[in-house]
Image (cartoon, rainbow, N blue to C red; front, side, top):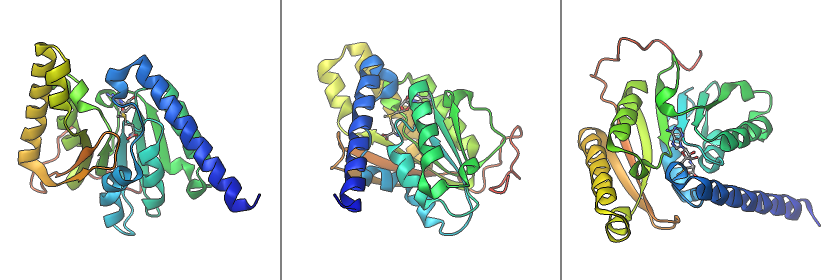
Length: 242
Ligand SMILES: C[S@@+](CC[C@H](N)C(=O)[O-])C[C@H]1O[C@@H](n2cnc3c(N)ncnc32)[C@H](O)[C@@H]1O
């Protein structure tokens, strides 16, 4: 067997193992895990495009809800030199898997201290940093509307003025819930969509559909306006060098 075959086999085996891990965690807690399979490469690329667009500029990047690392794996090679990446993940088993990914990723050899995995809910993330880009993988439509409002508000606080937030939403979930769930569940789902629609109206700069994902998803890009003052509790001088 040549080198290509063995490394290709290794990647396939790793994807398979992650697929199973995701499925097991979804069976344990579908509400928080929010999906039955990791995101596709196309979805991961769209979510991380704002990082790529900054070119060689060092950035502060936050990834929230990283799961088994399918988006993280696309994100790491797109980080420019001197950038900092904070990864937030609520599930302890996923957080352990992400730490392993950071320790062993070839692009981070000798530089893994630039990447920090936080095993916590993003609502409880304690950080002094502001971020140029936030990539969110959270399953918002499984949450209560008040929780979504809290998290979106926190994202806007954590963004640098002019910074970009990307997140995705699976397509068609409202109709699926209307057919399969209780009226209260369908109402909760609509209320979450209204919270998100309000942020989209105020801050959206783009939305793309990814039909090849399982299930198909929309990717949203939101930008914090430059003119909104930073909250007094945060240190706006915190830059990529810290
Ligand atoms: C839909 S999965 C996305 C995983 C990965 N980003 C991907 O696209 O394949 C959502 C992830 O968010 C995590 N999560 C859910 N609620 C969270 C919260 N409040 N704070 C941080 N992570 C959370 C879950 O444990 C899960 O790993």
